Length: 183
Image 1 (cartoon, rainbow, N blue to C red):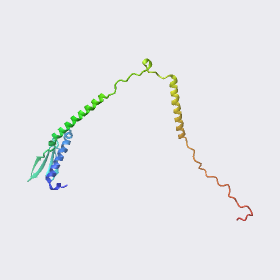
Image 2 (image 1 turned 180 degrees about the vertical axis):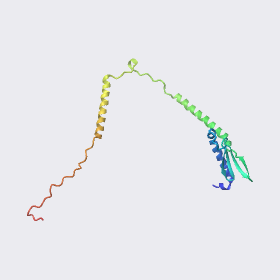
Image 3 (image 1 turned 90 degrees about the vertical axis):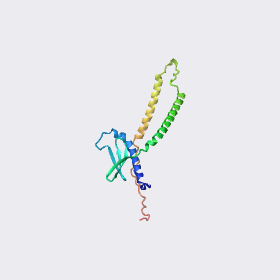
Image 4 (image 1 turned 180 degrees about the horizontal axis):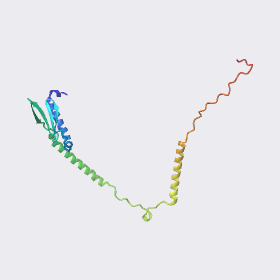
């Protein structure tokens, strides 16, 4: 980056950055009580200081000439784009509202009925299960529970340990018969 050749560009960039920073910090600082730090904050830059007004967010470049300091406000370049950006956002907002309205209208057409149709039963009343049907259901649940319990017990039971006892020693090694000539 070749910014070093143009020190005034550096000052303007820093000034604009501080303007944006000040604009973002202004609402937060406006609600804070004065802590005695003063209204202005000064930041050193090449050729002077940038002065930020903590109450209004205004930014000025302060320079010293022959032991006299003067501060000149830096232009706020963000306000030039504000009108174009505002109109673009208004147009986008209007388009989105129209799109939402179209989707809501489409939902109204395809909406399911809000009433639940009545159940066709004799006498117009729902019938409860009989005692026999309840017993059958409970018997089924009981069988499922017993199967589950048996499986859990099967897997929780300690597994038999493998035979860790030493294998039996061979009975005896065949010995040579007497008089066979073996030593």
